[in-house]
Image (cartoon, rainbow, N blue to C red):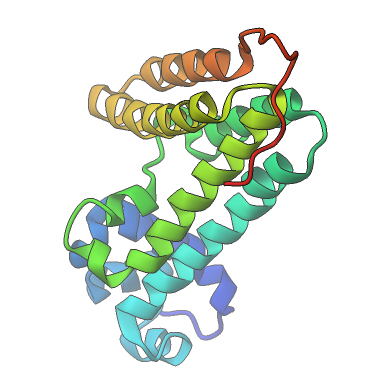
Length: 199
């Protein structure tokens, strides 16, 4: 039975789960209606731009969460080691130890990427740059920080795929544990430490 009243913000979570499960193309209005409890008319009332506007709203909410819980702490916390460890902990919690699909990653894997290219690129670029800067502050050389940031994101995304494909969170946990250890292990340099580099 369709709901008579709903707040737009209340629709983001069920919309996200539909997109995660079926992708953009497979998220039909029938499936979206079933997940939200709203009919087509109500959905278009909240999202006049249709399914594309719904997906943009979900991506914006994801970006907001990561900005608050991942990117800003990485960029503003003076204790870089604590911030980096916190990033891995928050990431594990957000992706339900690898059992929750990365929707931004899903959208980036096929032709859907062209529809949301700006949002997808902004998400991954922001993550790479903030982590790289934190790694530099921790003491890694710029080239090593860049490589570690790239490897960390690859480990997170790959860990999700393995955990989901094999239905075993241990693969995600192992990938994050190794990536975190590599990030927090700084080789000593003759000058003691490296200055923060602009990325």
